Length: 343
Ligand SMILES: *[C@@H]1O[C@H](CO)[C@@H](O)[C@H](O)[C@H]1NC(C)=O
Ligand SMILES: *[C@@H]1O[C@H](CO)[C@@H](O)[C@H](O)[C@H]1NC(C)=O
Ligand SMILES: *[C@@H]1O[C@H](CO)[C@@H](O)[C@H](O)[C@H]1NC(C)=O
Ligand SMILES: *[C@@H]1O[C@H](CO)[C@@H](O)[C@H](O)[C@H]1NC(C)=O
Ligand SMILES: *[C@@H]1O[C@H](CO)[C@@H](O)[C@H](O)[C@H]1NC(C)=O
Ligand SMILES: *[C@@H]1O[C@H](CO)[C@@H](O)[C@H](O)[C@H]1NC(C)=O
Image 1 (spheres, rainbow, N blue to C red):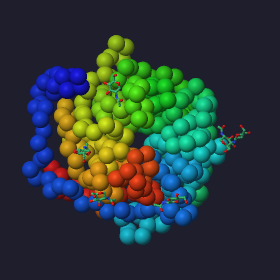
Image 2: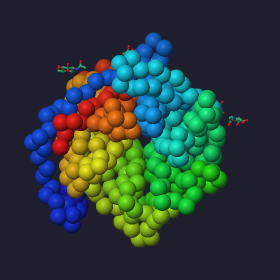
Image 3: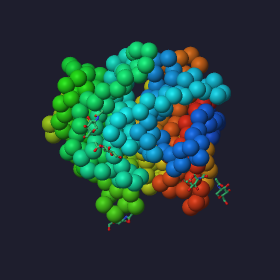
């Protein structure tokens, strides 16, 4: 069913569906762990999302056990220093995005178990890193939300605003980060979870490019796009189009490179896979039986400094959702993949 839709889109785009692994890429791409938590101090830890600062530092959100943002300084230095920014009244954090220079928005909530939110606890917070010490501010509570997950800034919005995926109720919200006002931006069938899936998760990661929101549907292991207006609201009557599909039973967040390729964290499958627009993804790092990027949750491209311009940072949840080989988990970590060899 998805393949016929995929074929149609690929056809419309003038592309060929079957995309062989690029000849110039030496796969798997080199990957190394640059930061990992200690299981004694942070057991059952899960990193969920990542954003880069202008100075190249990483901001990594923790979904459990605490609502912490790990600020990782000079991530490629060998033994990077880290500090923690805590968000109040929450037990876990998900999406993080820069909304103005060195000001970030982060999604928070209370969870009773992994990916199990406590109703009426979702909120949007701002972290301001412009001063000597980070400050935090509640943007708004969102009691109607189910599970706020991915976030992207709306570049064309007249006031600073973000789109936020909600995979509790299969919807995308628009949140004005200045006033805290929020409204529904999109709600289409392709955002729905598969009811009988092991972990029902629909719309998850989200990015905005050239008048479209791109979103992953975890259970469908697919990425779709939907036309939006300049304020981020879905164009009336717009239909979601399939742009990428992965040969696995789940994907998490994704990132889009300068050529428009979709790099997805497959989480349950312990790989990073890349799909060219209108095609099926191929694995570029990790393996289902390996810990290399086990339980990977999100990716971010380097390039804010000269030293990391070919790096893709990957966060992991330690394979807690689906242990490697059925039993093996590890503390949350950040992996740097060198994509120099990827053409
Ligand atoms: C991490 O700590 C938890 C709680 O103490 C324990 O159940 C788990 O087996 C530990 N995992 C590893 C990989 O050591
Ligand atoms: C945390 O929640 C309590 C109870 O709802 C409230 O009184 C307090 O102001 C909240 N704190 C922050 C920093 O939002
Ligand atoms: C989240 O749970 C903590 C207790 O663990 C509580 O203090 C806090 O008020 C809760 N937050 C919300 C938004 O209800
Ligand atoms: C869910 O139900 C559909 C329809 O009955 C079936 O085709 C599919 O295999 C089921 N999937 C899972 C994960 O059980
Ligand atoms: C998922 O893992 C299976 C089994 O190792 C592998 O054949 C498949 O290519 C993987 N797919 C992705 C997208 O990681
Ligand atoms: C999982 O099992 C495979 C096959 O036995 C083995 O090669 C691999 O090393 C195991 N993975 C881990 C992380 O131990």
